[in-house]
Image 1 (cartoon, rainbow, N blue to C red):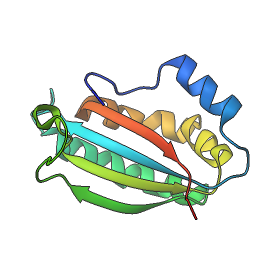
Image 2 (image 1 turned 90 degrees about the vertical axis):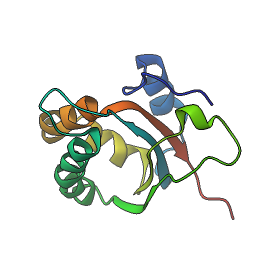
Image 3 (image 1 turned 135 degrees about the horizontal axis):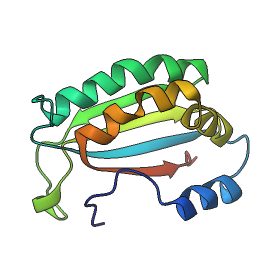
Image 4 (image 1 turned 180 degrees about the vertical axis):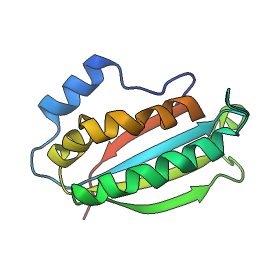
Length: 131
């Protein structure tokens, strides 16, 4: 997987997700995050993303979501280590509808810029639990 300069989902990917991901099915969004070294305001991308997390957590809770796991990437053992992410984050949503509700809300629109400004790339993979 080669992730560079991807922060927002292309419209066709988001529409495909809306149309084809099963309704009312829990999902876990795996975030692959590469931070900017420095943002225009002088903060690091990690600092900017942490501001985003502070503001997005109440919105997650509002739709029944929550961060399940967050980890700092230390070393890629198999894969492209030259573009490895800095952090991997797993976020639970009770359904795609909950994810969409949060993503298109006015509250999210007011804070989403923190994410965009802080990332070199932000891969987002919708997953379903296997039994």
